[in-house]
Amino acid sequence: MKRLLAGALLAAADLCGACEPALEGAPLARIDSPRHVLAFRTEPARIAVGEHFALLVAACRKDDGRPPPELRVDAHMPAHRHGMNYAASVRPLAPGRWRAEGLLFHMPGDWEFLFDLRGDGPTERLSYPYRLE
Image (cartoon, rainbow, N blue to C red; front, side, top):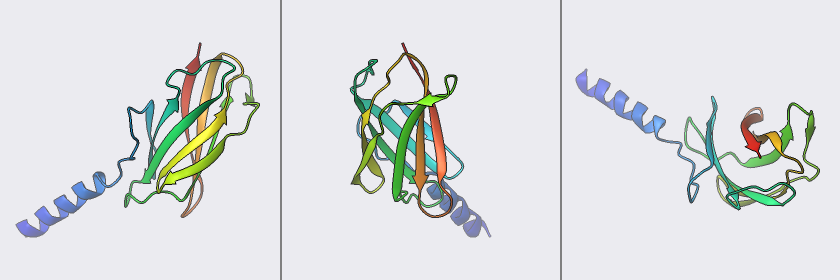
C-alpha cells in the first residue's frame, strides 16, 4: 500500500512539473490558466509609444506538458474599448514557442495583451494587463 501511495505521489509531482514554458531569457510575465501556462517577453524589453515591438511567447498544457498547436496574439485598451491599429503576425519558432511581430501601442495608458491558445478543445483566451507610460 505504501509503494502504491508513493508512486501516486510521484506521478502527481511529475504532472505538476510537466508544464514549464520554454522561453529563453527572463519573461515579462507568466500566466497560469486552468488548462495552460504561458510566458512571454517583449523585444525590445521596453515598449515605447508609436514604435513597433515583438513578443516571444512559450506555452504548454498543464495536464501533459504538450504545446498548444496554434497561438493568436492581440492587445486592446479595455477602458477605451479599442485595440491596436496593427494586427500582429505570429510565426512558430518551435513546438510551443512563437514570435509575434508588428505590434504597436499608439498611445500611453492601460493596455491588455490577449493570447488565444487553440488546439484540442475550445480556444482558451489568456490576458495580461500592461501599463504604458
